[in-house]
Length: 131
Image (cartoon, rainbow, N blue to C red; front, top):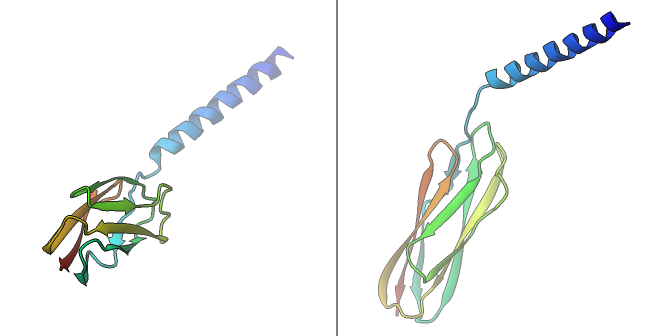
C-alpha cells in the first residue's frame, strides 16, 4: 500500500514538473496595434466649442494588447480609452476630446498611446482652426 501511495506521489510530481516546463516553452509574443488613422482635422471651430473624435484601433497581432497609459499634450484634451485588453484581431476606439476654450488660431494637439504591443508608443494628432 505504501508503494502505491509513493507511486501516486511521484507520478503527480512528474506531471506537475512537465506542465511547468511546457508553460515556460510556450512562445511569448506580443500583439500589434494599428490605428486606421493617425490624425484628424476638425476644420474651423468657434471659440468655446468642445469636440471629439474616435480613433479606431485594431489588434493585428496574435496576442491581446493592453493600453497602459495615454499622455495628452495639454489640459485642453481628454482621452477615453479601453481599460480591458484588446484581443487579437479585435478592435476598439480611443476617443480624443478637445475643448477650444482659451485657444485661438491654428491648434495642433498630440496624444501618445502607450501599450504593451510590439510598437509600444502610438502618436495621434488632432488639429483645428479656432475663430
